[in-house]
Amino acid sequence: MSTDLPYFVEGEFVLEPEAIEPERHGNVDLYIPKSEGPFPAVILEPGGPLPEDADWNDPREWSVYHGYGSLLAAHGIVAGLVKLPLYDGEHFPRCAKVLAESVDAVRADDRVDADRMGIWFWCAGGPLVSSWLREAPPWLRVLALTYPSLGAPDGVELPAGFEPSDALAEARELPRILLGRAALEAPAIAKTVEKFVMAAEKHQVPLEIIDVATGFHGYDIVNHAQKKVGNPPPGAVRPDFDASMVESRAAVNRALDFVRKALQ
Image (cartoon, rainbow, N blue to C red; front, side, top):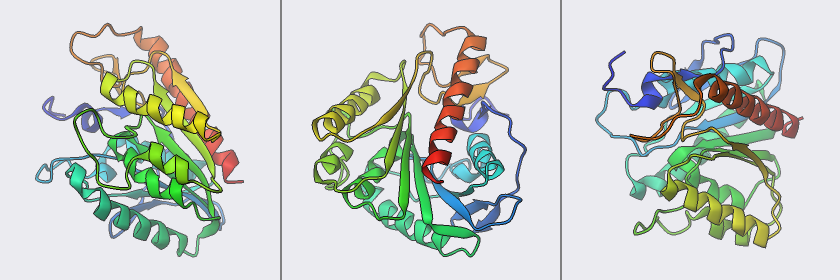
């Protein structure tokens, strides 16, 4: 593949589940288990913002999310991988609406147990968790966050209602919450995550935290040719490749186990 592609497009999933061909329904790709349903379901929200005119801007075509969809389906969970129109920070309100509509569409599928649902967020899609924290429906069993950005960096203002730390202050009954945290995260993102963790402690919201000691942002993506896991910044000292692979795979498997148990 071209080296001009972003690492998250060019790279591969750190695990190698048996590939499952998804069904495309509008802006959602469904990965369906091979056994008999109905099944619990998890909506996968890959994040952004992405350049609107790029020919690679559909996360449903990226290896890492094919991997997650196939992995969940292999464990008896429908995965609904969504494409959202997230091209700028100002687009969070419209994306929140599209995400909610996508969740409703997956819940309406006859193969899905509509009372056992989860949503999994990555990267800069993190602010979209806010409404689900503020008003979590009873059928929402789990919210998972993997190397998320959970707020606006210094000097940037998000649209009203999209600060996850503020949403925790308004939360009532919450589902189980998982946070996958990269120890070598970019400082601007790490600061938003720390703010969220402190807010959770203040409001006594339990978090299951997976710390990836050798993890950069994107620690579930590997470039084998470059022996690179995640997205180390230029000049960064990279941990041992094999050790990083072991830890990243363990982190993904642990996250899967948490989500699977929350949906039982």
